[in-house]
Amino acid sequence: MLMTILALVVSASIDSTTLCIGDQTDMRLTATCQENEKVIFPTLEKELIPGVEIVGKSEVESKKLGDGRVQYNQSVTITSFTDSLFYINPLAFVTGEDTVLSNSLSLNVVQPFEVDSTDIAITDIKNVYRAPIWWWGILRWILLVIVLAGASVGAYYLYLFIQKRRRVNTADDTIIEEVILRPADEVALEKLDAISESMLWTRGEVKEYHTQLTDVVREYISRRFDVSSTEKTSDTTLREIRPLLVQYPDLYAQLHSMLTLADYVKFAKFIPSEMENEQSLRSAYHFVRTTAIKDEADNAKA
Image (tube, rainbow, N blue to C red):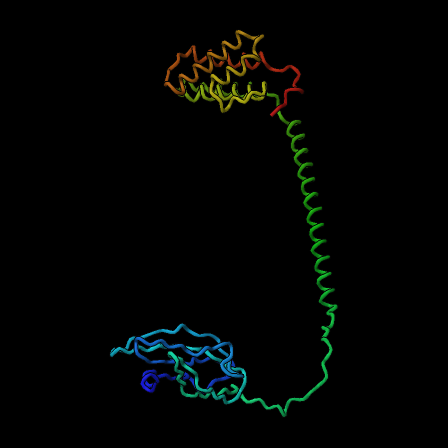
């Protein structure tokens, strides 16, 4: 029996024997015995002793020491919320039919600071504090909202006024433009007269001559027939205006010849004869005079 007891050696220790209230420390349990022996560690629940609580514990781990001996270790985390000096009784380890007790321990739990209870005066419970209403602050926010609302309304009506003025000015400009706009045929004939007087083709400026000539005719077609031809090719212009010249088949043929000849001169560097140059000018005059609206009050369109 004595050999069996002596074969089991147990111990208990604490990492820190002085502890502040609420802090934690580890208690370490150790048992050393022969490899063929089994050791049962103390059964520890939520409380180690009154006033000392168990926060957690590790599994029992084993470590071979040699010579047929093995060491078992377990760590138990403890804490306390009472400032006092605690004595921890020896803990029982069981092997076979024998029980071996560990050494006893002490744990000193202290306050982290001194509390002087003599200066604590007992007073009545105070009523709930009610913050005073800051009327000037409320009034300032109300005034700010009124000012912003007034500014928004004023900006809206200013916008409507500006838009109305713009519409009136646009309408006035349109009326003035329509009143002072000269008839399309009058403008075209005046420009043709200027081209005729310049006689550009006689000075070798054939390309410039046909360019000015076709520009006058295209502008006239755009205003007179409401067919945008200034940015279109000759083929497109002829195709769009042909239905409008059904009653003038010869006029359409002359317009076709004039625009086609101008394209040859401008893009193919064709040099027409003097007769062809003069014929293009005559065709332009004839086209404008024939298609001019007799009532000039009805032909003022941009």
